[in-house]
Length: 399
Image (tube, one colour):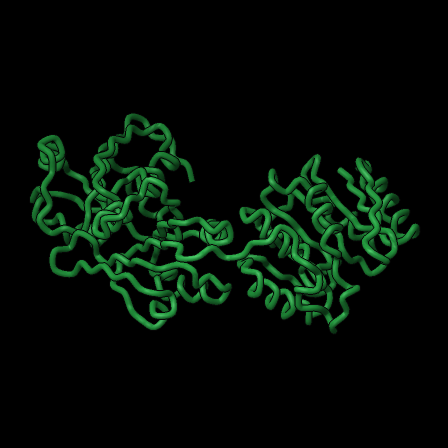
């Protein structure tokens, strides 16, 4: 939603949970002369005694589009927001929705700054992740990368116990968690430092935030041996060998991609390796055999790669529009329908999207080339590799 607004002005005032707020003289004048105010219900409770008697208040509640429609009726609005309004804050939203409006912000300390100060913790090298109404992607990437200090903004669904449970599920018990509850509230503020295993079983007052401090370095290999994976029926020959896997990922140029499809994932070794080496990727993995989901889940937990989406069933029947559009594709299994698969995915792919296929026979190589010609794309590179006593494999890249 984007609203064109002539001469609309927002004053966005950052506040904490403190009940005895003290504002600069300029902010006091803005509040005293204001007529229309807005904020969350908690903000209204904090500032209500400071508002003029005839003030109009607009609650910020979901859906936000309804709030913005109310904003359209006014030319000047004073908005109260938490902490620094430009730090994952409401001012960012206003600038996006009302690009022509003037926004004047008055920040206070954001919650992570307050928590760091309560802990007497230097935070200049802290990585910040917001889970407030957002997916797990950035948080997962921070864990996989092993960042030493991670500040996390929570919400009422992604709470400290839920976050701790996710960390433990994927083996990230190598962090200590500091949780700040209702920071700035003179009566209710609380700061605790705990282990993830203890956080899971506790409760925490909202609003809250947390800082993760790494206590040990978790192994993150560059190239996982095929023998280390959980296998399909114990068959090690069904898995992409580590040297082939790494070359495949290299040819996909995943450092510069955002969404990766792994078609025919089998054990999930390519998806897991891709997530380990390129944690920013959104990975969607497709497999016909339903048992593949359990194997992939086991491997994700073993190697610490949360966030891979598994899709099972006949690929030709999958509604692809339900998943993030890929800008890189690997085809590891095709069930003899390689040309059909290429035709199906072609309507989703942007120009220049790399498609990599590992051919184990002359017949599959020609089938891939036929399919690439049929969709109007071109083979760009072919590398032949032999690992140990296994048959040669051709890694073919098309765009």
